[in-house]
Length: 147
Image 1 (cartoon, rainbow, N blue to C red):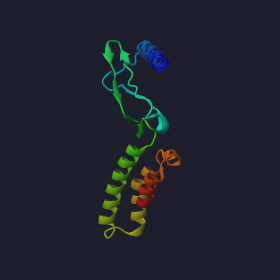
Image 2: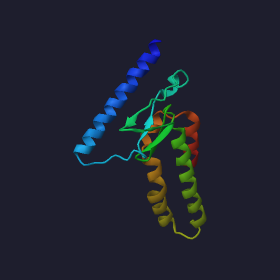
Image 3: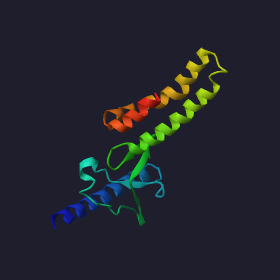
Image 4: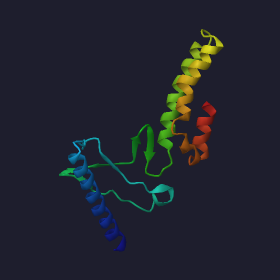
């Protein structure tokens, strides 16, 4: 019985924090879009199997949707912090751009191919590259193979 009470307090605390954010946003004339606002419970890899918690968080009378992952400034964050979904989308984007480079490489001089790589491919590797420190070996290998 101790765990549900603790989770109930957490849910109440979340709702209180959200109402404070809504009040602040309203006072500063920054309307929140309830349809785009989601709830993501980050448990980490070890706790994900032990905790099954989907809090009911509200903005006014609108219940926010619980999600398994969310995109924040181009980084796909999942509840386990494994970044697998981010790596999937990253590999897809890189594969497409590398495919284009392969098709046009015979048409472009070496200098322009390097320019294409530096402007279209390298930034994809560099953006939020901090996640590579926590990524598992399989995901890291997929990205390094593309590089």
